[in-house]
View (cartoon, rainbow, N blue to C red):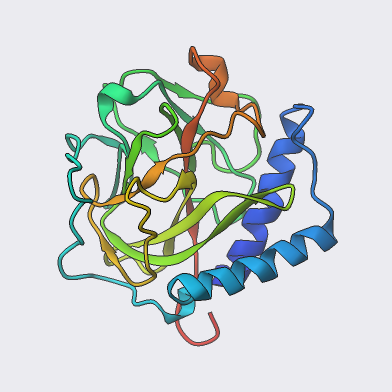
Length: 250
């Protein structure tokens, strides 16, 4: 399977999200019409440029020092929840705030598998026959409003609105891990940090150290699978590992 360009990656991610919502048999999770999706993508590109440029403009590979956490925020203890080769993915929220850690598959051909870390509390892995790599995505449950930290060391390569049924529901953030320009770490179900500052494309981030936002309350628009393993509505941070291409024409 050939590697995907960033544009192809965005289109496939949007299509996969709609397919996954339909498969969940939830009343609200239906497929968005292609025309609406096209309009949403155009608006997302315009807003992303307003917030700091596009993914194609951002540097990739090793970065210098990560930007500090937001003023007044105390970074949680660094807890690795998954690995893919030399890439470590850490908990994006403080361990005491985690309601469940739900590894599941993606139907995207660019999906990259993670190996869940041993000893994690409240860890579950989907075994529902989902197509794709079974551990290429992880939902980390936490109460809405919880501060979210970067799950990897790297650089911000895209920031755009995350849309559900054409409506903006927080942000979609893409990070490129340090020294791994062919990997994209997609983060959704997040909204701007308490100080209101939105990440800028090109900003360096440190795993478990850089504040990237807070958990958005999505209970009004969806009933996620992770809710089956928590005692609440299932609010969470969604993290996906995907393959991307770089260089001319990417």
